[in-house]
Image (tube, rainbow, N blue to C red; front, top):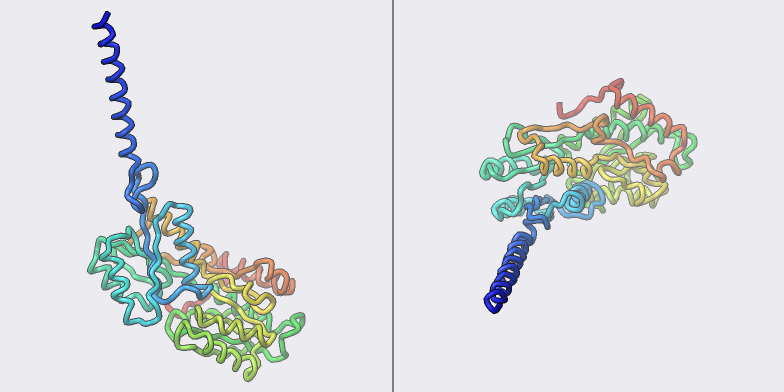
Length: 355
């Protein structure tokens, strides 16, 4: 009887030990290094976003950040954003330090100002993957580029501006057929915006005059305001299209103060000054950044390639929200729908200044 009891307790003890070992093994599987593994033990993808400026422009760089944040929220990315500031001398060290940290599976960086530096570092660190936006780096096996047909998007902005300046329904439009364009810098990609804007305006009315200026950078809002005040007051522009990131915020402010009209850029800026900012040319950096990160996670991103996103691909367009419907006359909205449809189906061809 005693031997039987001993065997019983020995068996119970063995079962308890096996349960304890199994529990310990399970705990070890669930343990993860913060920022590198998900709850099921799978490694989380990591993305770094290098801003060759500062955030807060409510358009260009902020739009990319929204796409990165969406990837973190919906795709499980571990994400970090580094602001490089406005001193270009700091950008090489800033971007290279992200690479050498080896924290990021992919780094998001862009703009024409970063092409040469990114090419150099991509060649120096061939194992680092890059998503490059708003300009092209071709034939590098670790770089995927997405460019936008800003000429098509700006064609829509130009057509819209021409309809505004010739409108008899908008009370703040004067008799002169004058529209304005203010760019950040006199560089090829900004001039592609300008070219599309001019083509769109002249598609509506060949007599429309386009006046233009450049701030000289993408952050000086007071200078943007000064230039646009001169256009509104001195050159009789009814509406000004700004393509100047944070510098363009001054343009929108000037239009609102004078009771004039403006067109935002990159993000939907209609809500900044409702009734003054009548629409915005959307360069859908947020959705395309999210799309690229989703493709990267699925191992489908075509590195070494450059992808062009236009009206047909929803890479660019006009912000037609509730404010647009409220403040833009129906006749203009109908005409813009017609123009957009013709762009989408290829009836209208827009020349790019980059070709």
